[in-house]
Image (cartoon, rainbow, N blue to C red; front, side, top):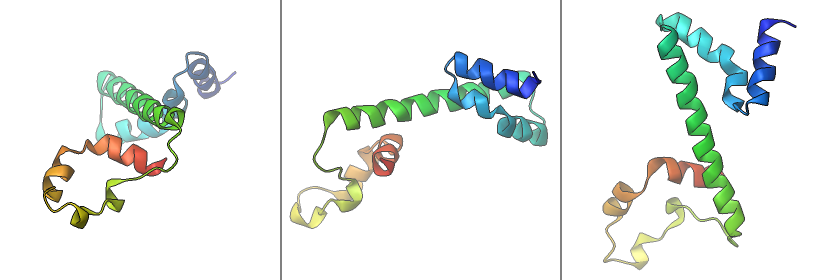
Length: 102
């Protein structure tokens, strides 16, 4: 079994989905001259990010909302006392993006 196949198999067994696609990060690391620690940090950062996105998507799915709404659809004109800029400032960017793609 070749090394890339072995890495993909081990990543699947350890349930590290982003590690199966390590070659993209490996190319990036080679281009930027990253060391082993930086490469590992990038891989782990991607894994954490994907897991957080999946958790949010699962919670939204489990909530069984009849409709998924985003802030883009909110009618700020209907509530003049609500400041749109403040709402956008308080909105967590990563959560908003995940909900929007669900």
